[in-house]
Amino acid sequence: MGGDVVVVDYEGSIVYAKVNKDGLYVCPLCEVALFQSPRDLMLHIMAHAKGYTEKLAKIKKEVE
Ligand SMILES: [Zn+2]
Image 1 (cartoon, rainbow, N blue to C red):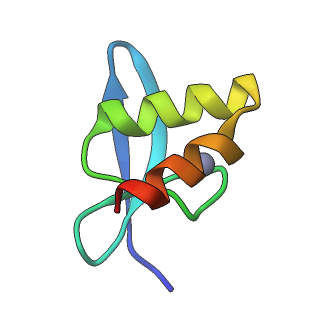
Image 2: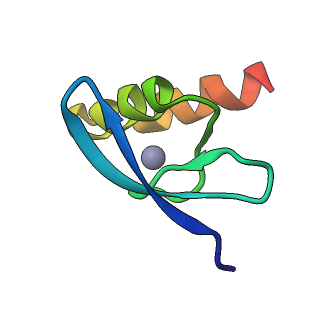
């Protein structure tokens, strides 16, 4: 494991997230979703708060 923890600042919202070896942000909540941009990470975290992450994770998988 490991990976650097970075501060992600998106429109005034700040979260701490790990960056994996490919330079992708790792969701600090579910630790499975990966994102290229702070915006995508934030949208995903907001989705956690609203409770539809399962759906999003599935969409993400299909996209990849
Ligand atoms: Zn997540």
